[in-house]
Image (cartoon, rainbow, N blue to C red; front, side):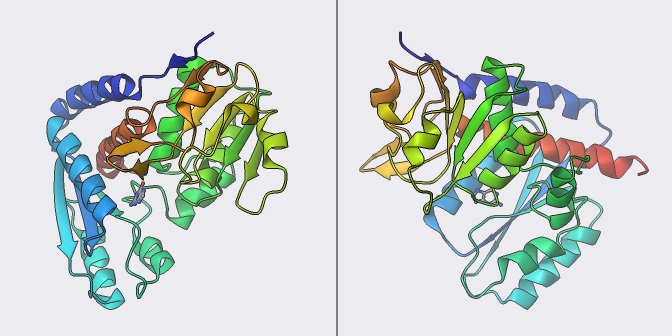
Length: 282
Ligand code: GUN
């Protein structure tokens, strides 16, 4: 049996179409501030893609592209200005930041009400407590939508996540736990990783190691979600060896065209929500 391919591009396009209609009905246009420090190559591409997608649905994005040598103080000043600017609904600071800037200090300075990346400790803490945060990080949100498009009822499922990052692995584990899954997070120091992954009904790879996951890592008929974006020459590939696993899995997300487009769609959805949130009394 060949795995079905989950079309993240199509699901994201449907979400964006819905957002476009929602924006038309709003009294004002939602506005996203994108802060980029320096010229990290992948970040430049991600930011360009975010701006392009925003424009497609009629959402305003404003890029604050700062010099590599911008000080922490200057960056904090910009965040403070954006926090109080009534035209700005959502703020994201593209990561990674240059080494001389303390990332936590910057993220902690963003108003939780404008934190459309869902990285502020208020939002991550509320998620941990299984209460409603203002925002949940876009990639985990997108992954949940893709998983549910194949397996709508998640209660009792065995899930293994490869990668314990703050942006993907940890919030995703919490979202799945909140849906009554049994969740294992593995990382670079995990021993006998294959023994764990081979028991997963749903396996999520988010570790940034090209084609790490092979057919003997997975259970027959597992759902595979590939968050990795790795460069192999001119080609992009994921953390899962697609060709090796495709005859064993139930379904798999491709790279590109799987999780990537969903991340952007969910960021835009968060920004529309931010606009609504700031218009209504808390
Ligand atoms: N760098 C990699 N992924 C992300 C993301 O989702 N948001 C931000 N701000 N930076 C990132």
